[in-house]
Length: 546
Image 1 (cartoon, rainbow, N blue to C red):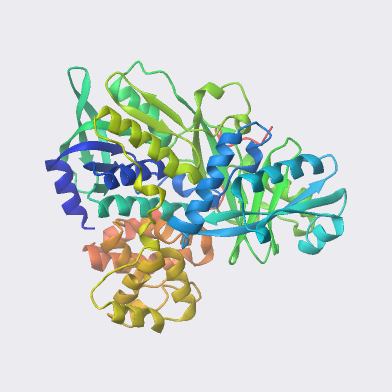
Image 2 (image 1 turned 180 degrees about the horizontal axis):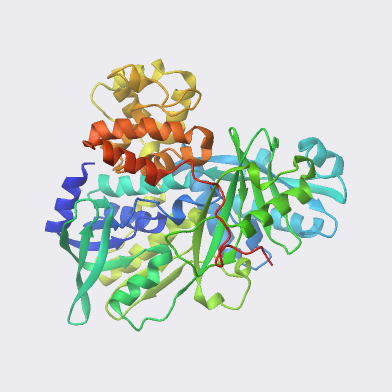
C-alpha cells in the first residue's frame, strides 16, 4: 500500500463508516465493514497495533480463569473464535500451545475446581482427543517440568490453548480491510469532530507524517481508540461520563538459558491470579500483572513493583532458576480498557467483555474485550452500524474468510517467487512462513533482487533484510520501531539482536524512504532497543499485586 495514495483517498472521499483507532478492535471492524460492502476509512494516530494490541501475552485462549467468575458465555465464545482462527482464518499465525498447570497445596485452585474448569473448557472447544486435558500426579508433573518446586506440589493438569502474534493478527485485519476497498492510514490523528444537526458529520484530522490537515467525512463514526476511547467521546460530548477503567499488564522477557523450562506454565499466586511462563525460541515470556493505572498513557512501562511481583510468582514455583531483575533482558507493558462498571472490584475480577456506548450524536464507541474475540466483537459492531445506516447487515463474511496470509496469493512470476522462497536458508524460510503465511513469497521475491536482501539482518536472527523493504512497500511501516517492534516482533522474540537489527533496518529504510543521516539517527533513538528493561521507580510505577 502506498501511504500517500491512502491519505489522498481519506481527504477526498465520503465514506459510509470511519473507524478511529487501528488496534485489534478497529482493524477488525474496518475489515468486517469493508467485506460487507460499506465504504470504510480507518485512521490510527500511531502505528497499527501500536499500543495494547501488541502488548498482550501472545495467547489466543478461552480464558480459563474466567470460569470461576461465571463468565461462561465469554469463555464459550472465545473458544469458538480460538478454533476458527487456528483452523480456518489464521492457521499461519495461531498455533496450538500445550500448558502445564501445576497444583500446590494452599495456593491456587484445588484439584476438583481445576478439573471441573478444564472439563467445561473441553466441552466448549470440542478439541480432538489428543488435545483434551488430562490430570497428572505429582511425579508426572515433575517429569513434564523438572524445574517445578517439589515442595507442596500435589499434581496438576496438562491442557491446550493457542498462541499467536497479536500485532500481525491486527495488521492482517488492517490489510484485508484495504484489500476490500478500505482507505487506511497510520499516523493520522483525529483533532476535532464537526457536527451538523447534532450528528457527527466529519472530523478534522492531521497527517502526523506529512503535516497536512484535512476533513474526514463519513455518515457514521466508530471510536475504537482503546485506552483513549473516553478522550474521543469527550471531543464529541464534553460531558460524557467515564466508560472505561484502565489497568496495566506487564510482561518480562527472560533468556531461555536462565529459565530453561520445557513446558509453557500457568502459575498461580497466593491471591488466585495466574501468571504465564511461555517459551518462544530463545526467550521466555513471563506475565502478566493486573493493576489499576492512572498515569501517562504515552509512557507505560514495567515498574519495580511489577517486576518484583512477577519474579516472586516465578520463584515460588521455579526456585531453582534464582531469577533477579538483571535477568529481564526486555519488557513491555500495555493498558487494558475494562468497563467502568467494575469500579470497586479487584482488576482481575472485572469482566473482560467489551464496552460499547452510543452517543446522541451517533458516535459508536467500543473498547476492551479479548484479543481472541476481536472478530465476534467487530461483527456485532458492524451489525449495529449497518442498521443505523439502513444497510442490510447480512451474514458477516469474516465467519469463514481466511485472513490474507491464509489465502492463496497470486503475483506475477509466482513460480519464480516460490523458487526464491525455496532458495532461502531453512530458518529464514520457516520464519517467513510463520510471519506471512502464503504471502511469504512476496518478501522472498524481493530477496532475489540482491544477495544482501536474501541474508539475515543480523547473523543468527531469522529476519531477512528483504522484510524491511517488504514492510515499507506492502505493510505501511513508517519507522524503525514499526519494523522492529510490530512487523517482526524482534524487540521481544530476539531482544539481544534487536539493537544491531535496528541499525541495519534503519539503513535500508533510509534508502527506501529517502531519509537523511539525521533522520536515520533519530529513528534509531526513537526505537531505542537498548533501553533498560525496567523503568526506574516513580510515584506512579506499577504497584505489587494485592
